[in-house]
Image (cartoon, helix red, strand yellow):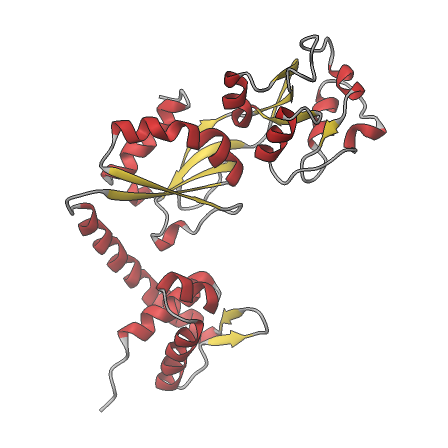
Length: 295
């Protein structure tokens, strides 16, 4: 008689397939990497075939593993969705996980979350920050706020914001008020983005051939840090207006010169289509679109 297949081992294998990493699967399952490896080995011994191709720093599903994953992963997604549906019906606070970039969280989302909490005290928001789009199929993230083209296959993406690049500085640096022309910015120290391209992009869009010093100056990893540098009077910065809005309203920075430049990428509210009718997801989606003036 053939021995039964361990449900726990199958669940672990599916998580390794989703994450592409034993370490990350262990984090998701709240177990040790050694426990994950052992569960996969149990399956490999049971089926008599290798399910993973193990490298020095990563693992990939073998051809056998890919076939098994394709057959059983949809079943676990259905189980996860069913459990999540019943979780939604439990009394008490409901948790909503929102994934976005560190800059968007710090500059745009966080200052507004108090209004959502006032409207929906029964929903507890957890903000996760990451540069890359979170895995929306895992069920670990309810909504993602992302900057891109809006092309997210299999996901619902609603347009949230159309950002523009703006030049900013502190009132203490721009003591005579806004500058008269974009080229006047080149007379000041320039604070740079990580890739040192935003100043050149902004200047060229305003008909100015960037000078050599347009890419010189201290660089910062994200717009939130650039805005802090501008606040401190270290120089002028080019940032997305959606990040600068809160500081501009507070008067800690000002527009250096009125010459905004639209960006190609936009901000979207991203979620799984089957999650659109979940009350907490629908409530947050409706609220954030209203905050952005979309609805």
